[in-house]
Length: 233
Length: 158
Image (cartoon, rainbow over all chains, first blue to last red; front, side, top):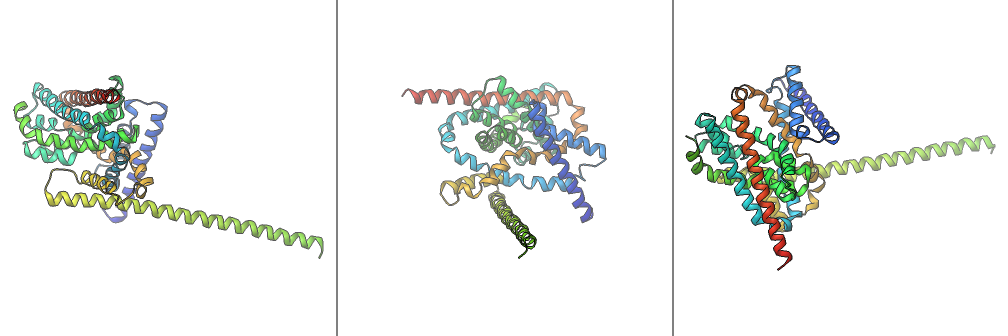
């Protein structure tokens, strides 16, 4: 792509994404439901417009690179609410740790067993089992346990979307109201997207989710090489 | 001096005064705007530098941890040690966290290229992903809430 085209494609992609996001915020204000959570709602709009306009994901690349470049600094900023709420966080270190370990091991075991029950191939089953780790770590774990890294990345992204869209609804139904627990659950299961969703509810929940995302991924990477060969073969 | 001429002069002075006020106002506002832009840019630069440092450290140490998590921990450590202050990062940091979801949209848009595989095993994949996410969310949320509640009650009645 020529530089001019790259800039034009980037500007189009960024405006489209920002417009879809702004629309999702408005939609959520009028009708709050799992289907109007920002990531799910905006993704559907962006994909629909790209398909309708005949734009491939490759041509959306410049916008993707520009927007996701801010993802790293934004995640680093989660240290701020964590620091502001450090007392509440360290007081609940033991409950948070227990919830984190139970959540990341539980989701791994259930995913692997269901994949096996449906007769999915072992490399697909292993890829599904580690989907709650954030993408950069999940791809590394995939190599360790003979899973498929590309498939793993897809399952990670879908899990992020499922948890961000339906997680808050499920936690409401289960009467899980503590911001610490909500952030912990969303970050442990739905990594970055869950963290983003938790941050829209409550700044402290977002900070807890950010830490849970990291610790959950470490927990998954330590357990997967031992646990998954027992569950998937 | 004729009254008419006086009126014209005073009128012109009023216009000039109003014009000057407007200009100063505009200048004041634009310098405010520049100041805010520079402040936000320096805050983004600070967060970005921490992120780059995290990526670099992960590369050097070969640990399977994302660089931005290392950046998060580094910022927390710098805040705890009193080397940096929350106010150095705050207006921008809070805004980025509030709109964190926006920065994930391009990643999920990538699903449009994976639709073929996902649809060929849609039931098995959907059941495995949805059920395991639900179990994990409930386990993590429920256990931490019950234990945190127990600890709070134990703290109330020592």
